[in-house]
Structure formats: C-alpha cells, structure tokens
Amino acid sequence: MPGAIECRGLTKRFGRLTAVRELDLSLDAGTVLGFVGPNGAGKSTTIRMMLGLCAPTAGSVRLWGADPLRDHQVRARVGYCPGELRLDERLTVAATLTSWGKLRHSTDTGFRDELVERLGVEPGRQVRGLSTGNRRKVALVGALMSRPDLLVLDEPTNGLDPLVQEEFMAILGEAASAGTSVLLSSHVLSEVERVANEVAVIREGAIVASGPTSQLRGNLPQVFRAVFAGQAPPAAEFSALPGALQVDAPSPRELKISWSGAPRPLLAKLGGYDIESLTAPEPDLETAFLSYYRNDEPAAARRAES
Ligand SMILES: Nc1ncnc2c1ncn2[C@@H]1O[C@H](COP(=O)(O)OP(=O)(O)OP(=O)(O)O)[C@@H](O)[C@H]1O
Image 1 (tube, rainbow, N blue to C red):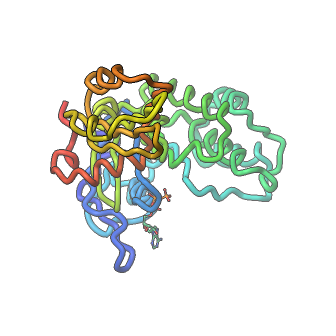
Image 2 (tube, rainbow, N blue to C red):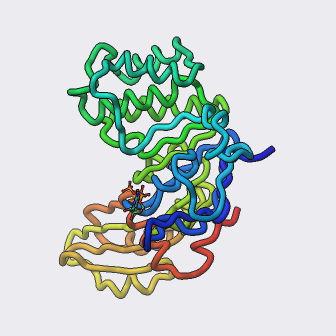
C-alpha cells in the first residue's frame, strides 16, 4: 500500500533561489512525522507542494499514490493548518467553521463542538479582532473536525498559550492513536519529540537528518553547566575525557562542557569536586542543527540507523 506521503527528488526554485532541493521523504499511514528546521529552511514550501498548492520545479509528491495537483479527492482526505492564516475577517468564528464544513462535506459536528470546547474557541466572536493565538485555534479546529486521514500542520502551536498547547498536543496524540497520519512542522524539538515517532530535519531546503525520534535525539550532544563552590578546575581536565566535545569557562567558578554519549565518565569526574549546581538544559534546535552541520561526516546526514 502506498504511503500517506511520498516525496521523491522534490525541488522548488524561486528564480535563482532553490527553496527545496531533491527532497526525499515518506510518511507511512499512522505515523507522526516531525518536520523541523530553522526559519526559511523550506518547510512551508515543501508542505505547499505536498498539498498541491504549488507545483514542484522537479521531482514528485504523491498522497496515497495520487498526485495532489491533479486529484482533488485525495486533497479532501487531508486536514491542513497553514503557518500563515488567512481568515475571512467579516465572519464570526461559528460561520467560519460552518463554511469550511460545507467545503469538506464531512464534518463530524459532535467532534467539532468537542474541539471548540477543549481548545477554548469562542464561536460567537468576530474573526476581526481575534488574537493570533485565537485565530490559530479556529484553524486547528478546521483542520481536525473532519477527522481526516492525514493532518498537515505547519507550526500549529505558534501563538498558543501553554495550557492550550498542552490540550492540542493531547488531541493530536488521540488522533494519532486512532490511526491518523500527521506531518507536524515545528521549531520546537521538545514538542515534536512528545508526539512524533519519526523526525526529519530540513536545512537550506535539504533533509540533513532523519530517523526515529529517540535515535535522533540520542545523537545530539548535551551541554552541562557546572558551577563549583570555589575556583573551577582547569578546563583541560575535562577536555581530556573521551566524550568531551568542547569545554569553556564562562566565569571563574563555572565550566560549560559540551558532551557526546552517556554522561557517566563526566559525572564521575565532577564527583571529585565540590559542586554548587549542575544543569543540563535540553539542547535547542539550533544546537541540534549546528551539531548536524559541524559534523560533516556523511552519517550525520543520512538516516539514523536503527
Ligand atoms: N513565493 C515565494 N517567492 C520567492 N521566494 C520564496 C517564496 N516562498 C518561499 N520563498 C523562499 O523560500 C525559502 C524557504 O521558505 P519557507 O517559507 O518554505 O521556509 P520555512 O522553513 O517554512 O520557514 P519559516 O519557519 O520561517 O516559515 C525562503 O528563503 C523563502 O524566502
């Protein structure tokens, strides 16, 4: 059976700019794929080609084996929340949802009302005057309410407050458990990690890493920040350890150690000192991207081996 999404050699050029270059990507039915990349990496352009909203310069996209540019029926199986929302300012929220429902012919109204309730959407309000976050919530209800086979969500949590984000991620988890395939584009690795089984990292229009979420995350270096009770020991003591990638001393009592692999040898070494605090913040996406870029080994750009 063909996958929900299959992109082969997908390329999009705008004049001299190549926004997406020879991108191969697959999304199997029932999988949640996190599609992550920095601003301008080519996520939205790829998504627009996947939905038949713009034509590739080269390569192909297939949704369940069909060409979304030509096959309108296949597009009806997709729920899409765009990154940039264009809503009809003259309508109320309720009228907006009704008009989208008419286009789709397949709204589950009970589910729509449940989504409205859970995401705190106010149906009586005028679209004009809605905040960015409230507009996003309306668009998410629109994408989900027909219980589509495939959800394509471009930065869906942008502008949502933390409680709504939490609820939305729960709804997404439920949809995935029910067998919906999801393509979730995001800047936020922790968000993707929670729901996605697979991750594809895009940079400058090309996939630089892809594979099971846990694997990709496990390959990232971690940065430990140790604050010592007195003067920090010489950085060289730590840079000699086999997992140490880089050791800096941002202040006289502090060391910042970039570490790859299991941290046991580092913790053993640190155990010999009087330490006031040790923190290891989650690597942000920028760090992740930098690691994929600094490390020029071909393995970093290939699919993580399982
Ligand atoms: N219609 C267009 N005409 C010309 N250039 C475009 C067009 N659409 C996108 N681009 C360019 O293509 C590149 C990729 O943009 P795209 O919006 O796909 O990135 P993105 O990963 O979605 O970024 P963001 O996270 O900032 O939304 C950017 O350099 C952008 O300026």
